[in-house]
Length: 220
Image (cartoon, rainbow, N blue to C red; front, side, top):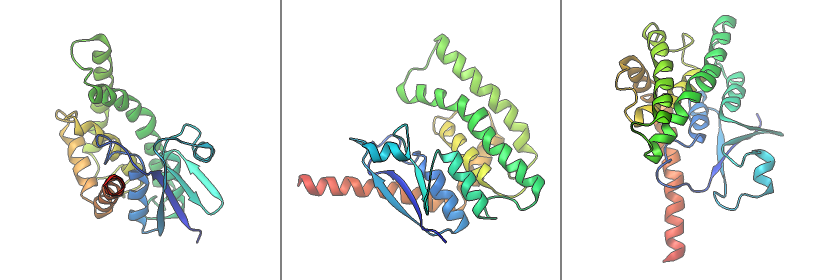
């Protein structure tokens, strides 16, 4: 089996820690018990090698032998094809997992991310832009709530679709955006209680904390 290498930033500011998207990949790798190692790329001064792997200068990317994959959704789909722990074996359920993986990214996250960015920046309140983004997200959550009410996971068994959807909703919940959507909130709690998430989250936080410690050592 090829050596899996997950590349993320060497450091990020405090606010996004725990939400950098390498967490999704860590979660999947832990869930599937696939051996991997983590590599770092500079947060500042991103060079040509970084852009060769990730054309927008973002993270993460995954190296699988001689294959380099960027975009968290694409990486999750790749890993899903490598492990039955991440995608159902039944063709119908497998198709369902793939459609929900794309729905999480293209239908839910496209609504939640602008909303979350406004929350991060404090640009909320009685403005047309805020109302528009808030209403857009609420419309998506209103449709998702009854879907999740009828199932434990999106495609019968836990899959990469749940990793992506739960992580998208987790950011909304950070700002109490799931307050009126108890089924969505319970779904996030159920997903993030899995040992694979707990370890992935702890590992990401430790990774950035180690960078803080190394920087403090240099300055002392």
